[in-house]
Length: 258
Image 1 (cartoon, rainbow, N blue to C red):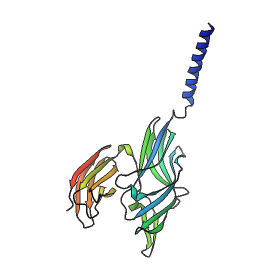
Image 2: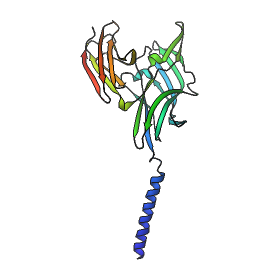
Image 3: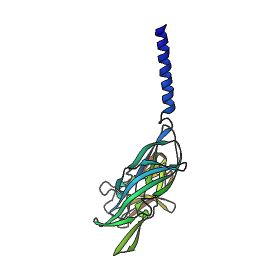
Image 4: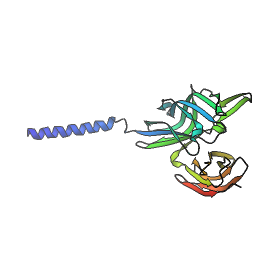
C-alpha cells in the first residue's frame, strides 16, 4: 500500500510540475521577429551607417530586437543580398513600426573622400518606419528593410563643399510575401543596371554582374512590374507587365541591350 501511495504522489507531483511549467513558460506566448536589411544601387562608393538599436512598436511601447551596434556599407547589400540586423523572441500581437537608431553615418566618394551623413534625430528618437504585421505564438516572422540609399541620401551644399543628409525613402516588407525577377544580360561590359518599376515608382534596382551578366530584383511585393536594364552607353532593354508571385523567382532568361 505504501508503495502504491508513493507512486500516486510521484505521478501527481509530475503532473503538477508539468502544468506549472506550461503556465509559466515565457516562450508559450511568444514568437520570433527577425529584421533584415537590403539596398538598391546608389551613385556613391560607400554609404556606411552604424545601427545602434533595432526595435519594434506594439501597444504603445518599443520592444528591443537588437542593441548590438554594427556598421554596414549599404552598397554591399544590392542585388538581393541581405544582412540580419537583429533577431529576438517577442510577445505576440500586432506591430505598427520598426525603429532604427543610428549613431554614425558617412558617404564615401571617389573611393577615399569621406563626408558626414547627417541623420536628424538618428541617435535619439531614431528612424521610425511604418509597418503592419502580426506575430503569432511559436512562429518566426521575417521583415526586410530596403534602405534605398540612392533616394534616401540627399546631396546639399556645393560641389566644392558637399554635404549630405538622410531623408529616408525606405520600404518595410514581410519577406514571406515577396518574390523576385532575374535575368542574364548577354552584353554586360558597360556597367548596366536593372530596375523594377511599378507605375512611376522605381521600386528597386540591381547592378548587373560585369562577367556573368546576371541580375536579381529581389523582395518585390506581388504584382506587375516594368523591368528596365540600361548601361552607360545608353543601350537598354525594357519589358512591361512582368509578373511577380510570392516566394517565386520569375526569370527573364537572356536579354540583350540594344
